[in-house]
Image (cartoon, rainbow, N blue to C red; front, side):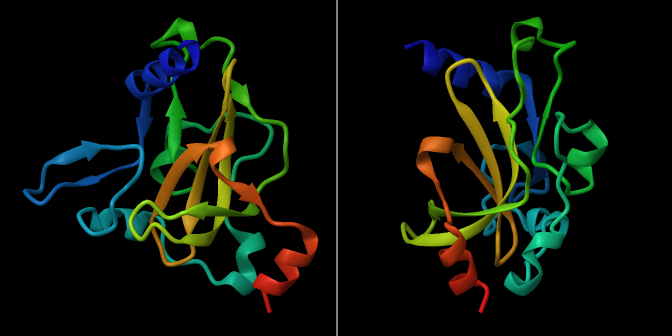
Length: 156
């Protein structure tokens, strides 16, 4: 129950990358639907698997609003706006990393580039970029990082 409360708090307190709906209105969302949000692919263009390590990320700290707008991260957490998020911090890992997720659109497993990880008291939030362009997010238990051998295979 507490995990659900934190997730709701996250959704209410975090500005996510934005795009436009079919009517041109600005919308905030956790997973940008590339079909209805062409700005997501502009801000987060396709990634060449051979050069995935050059994908822009923020390491060791939470990103700024500007980094969320320029495509370096997908979420901005404003602790001043919501003091309940005081314990939220960057997850200790070096990014970018490759991971498997189940694509919410196709329901198939695919490789993504993880560009953001945020530690909440009860879970870790993961922001990723699709190799084909656009972004998505999930909890860390909903993705699996590639092993060294899998990375070699995927980048051939």
